[in-house]
Length: 598
Image (cartoon, rainbow, N blue to C red; front, side):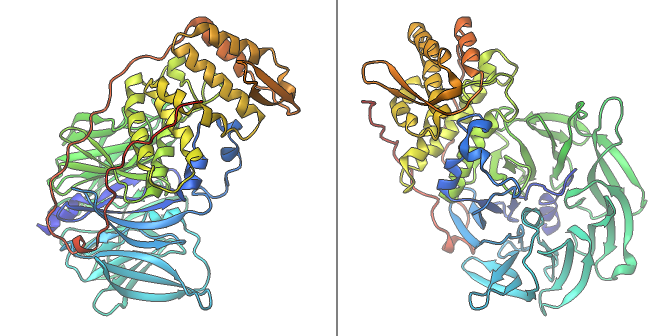
């Protein structure tokens, strides 16, 4: 039973860079998920909401590009009960945390953390097992320097051997895995230049990846016999998750990209059977990479019997889908956001009825979610307001991740509204309804109202709720940080007039904008008599007024779509050691009261 449950939790992948999506790990019962996130404060997230094009957004242009996760982020390890959203914050740190592993009986959660001593600022590396509010430090040792693996460590999980006696823990400072005996806390074996270790279902064997120059070698070994039993299996590109054992413990499954061909590079599933000791290609799992595309990562999650298989391949420049196969037969393609955004690290629940995954990656900034496979209902995992704010920003970025073909005053209207190839309006509505709900949920958070205005306006527009945009338009104009943004907001107001059939009013605004000497415009203000005044002095040479004028001439209007249904209330969960330590996700909040525009 334990073997079949553990097989559900293992996924494999390949990655063309070292950064990959951290896993969302199911408890053996399927009642809980655990995951690591790195999120900034609510204020920091909302301040970088992508309302303006990136080259004109002050927050975007001044972001720290050297740190993919940005400054001021906090690492947190959460355990969330999936049936009702009850959550326990297991760990919190300014240093990266490893992804966790559930014990074979589901009562403990093991992870690696870095602890700083307040007395002398010294750092220690700790291996911890959490039992709800109680915890045990299995191993501690000092660190000679500050760890620098960051989001790379987040993607590496602790491994808990199915017999319960051994932990495989990643090193916070370099690529290495340490095998630790739980009873004594002693090191059984140190695997240098190694990543992503997985145990066989019976615990007697293990597999891991070892660095070999610019590639990684998959190694299969006997846990009890030591280094002399290490057997090379295959060379693959940069791995992003462990190799997966079949439930009988006799085969390994893993993914790797094939050699480039005229059709493009494809990701293939391989199998290695212990009795044969020869890797064999099983099948291609996704269409080839297009010219100019790179494979960012690929992932597999399998069911207990090996029949149900879920694949994700991440390509640069396109959104992702979850491919569902039964054996050798493709069955379905799942689009949690109707084809918008980047998905990674799928993880099938032990019962086989739900799939957890990450959104907005690849990397440690990706966000956790789950989907029910029967009705495809999406459930973002939201134990705190920091994750809500991060989701609000990620959804807006997913609406149009690439470079738009036309320059616009803001990121609205989206390219599809202007006749370009893109998702349907129904897809945007599904995304926007979730974004609007999460923005309303922040009403009780003591964050500045002005930081919520841009998300409110953005998602209301995508839902064609132009009255809703009107109610916050006056506040929106106050969020402009420079002269060009003020002028762009006036262009956005013209867009609203076009969408509502007020063509003459829109043309007057556009005529005003087009006839300004834009190289010197500094600020635009209403004069109180229905007109506008302009002060000058800021250099700007952008052409979006002409593009918007062309749109007005062509009478381009948004298309209609459907709305996302509200998920039904889930049933109550079974008791767990974590049940007595959880804090509520938060009671339903009332809608934001928006004052009418004066």
